[in-house]
Image (tube, rainbow, N blue to C red; front, side):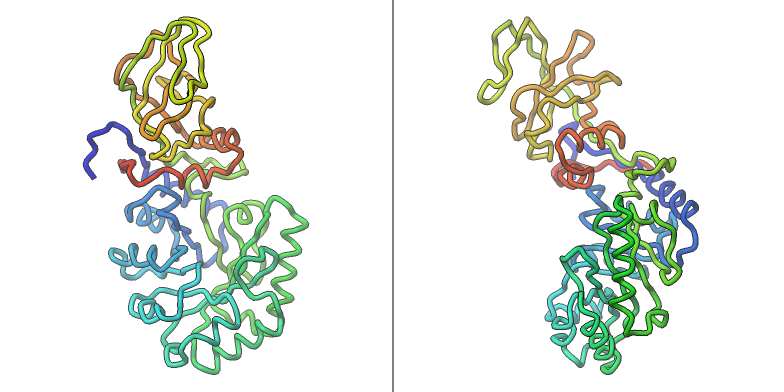
Length: 355
């Protein structure tokens, strides 16, 4: 994409690789480290990010859809890829052709797969231990599904569940127990890959003896509740494209929600809600030369306004998201999570990759 507007997301590839190495060094003992690269690697985009995740030590990838898997497979022919979402049965031949591992979320889904395809598929069974989204939550159904797949020659390469509140020790340990209960009727140790822990669980709980895989998601991009020395992996940059002098009493932007209390100076910045900076960001700070300045007025589709001082000049760089600490601050301000802020940055914002 041509970059004629100086608004972009700067992606630090070496920091992503370093983060993965740090995580694996800190939490060794797993045989399989799944790099979760769904949603364009949490908004980072491009297969160069995926390559750095693999270089850092991840030996399996996880995505949310077949579309995402195929986008990666265009360049990366050999890395195993697990689709965490549901793939409709009519598209299973595409999975076979492109070596995409599928998730079986229910007994019904398993029995509806064409029997002639089963020997050619690589499958992971999803167990529901409390998330109540995808997965089997009945012990008899787990046993029946496992036997059915074995009967028709389907390779059950893996089995997994998802922890829904890793910050809560009691709830998480109940999920661990539930997983063992639901899989008690099958030879769990004969399944090549058992993976339960995702980012927060890896960092908060010791490796379980029957588990040999873990899934690394947002932690690869520096976001964690632990004190790991992880690095920021991106920043969102724009610039001042106009400077206005306001007289006391003048308003700014749509609906005039901001009124100058004194004579003031404002900077117009070339980024808006069509780029992923939603209107609720009004009131929080951006950075210009390391100094904080507040967003004022209603954020527009393509622009937003910042209250500035005389040190700010036309075409100065504005850090809309400065680093991972700022990202967390923004997500708290928006009453959401860093994942959502990251994924909100739209594809019309070019990504500039630094090695």
